[in-house]
Image (cartoon, rainbow, N blue to C red; front, side):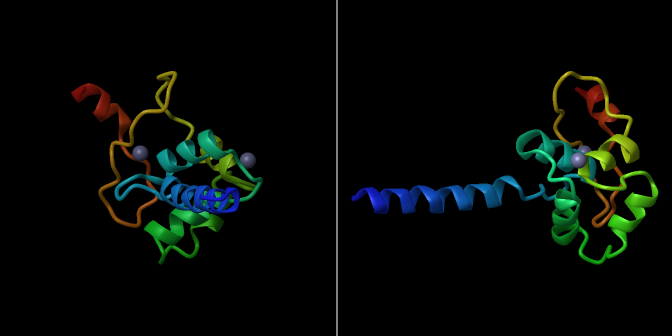
Length: 118
Ligand SMILES: [Zn+2]
Ligand SMILES: [Zn+2]
């Protein structure tokens, strides 16, 4: 394998990997998805992750970003987390999403329930 081929192969793998890594889980709620993405990739000052979650998990919620903006997530994904989903359990680490069972709903999962049963 030449250096060029190797670089191309690594790049293709990275692209594939980042596609998978930034894909919301099948029942992952918007809040846990935003936390995971901002933790891994940071915020770009816009609603990049909110839009991605919406496109993949709630494509009919065309007013989602506008609604979150009215709730305080004005400029970007981290404002959505801070102002719309402020009650994250203080676990010192990211918790696995407990699962949003209503497809297309942006309501956060119930992590307290998860901790009780754990
Ligand atoms: Zn931000
Ligand atoms: Zn969740």
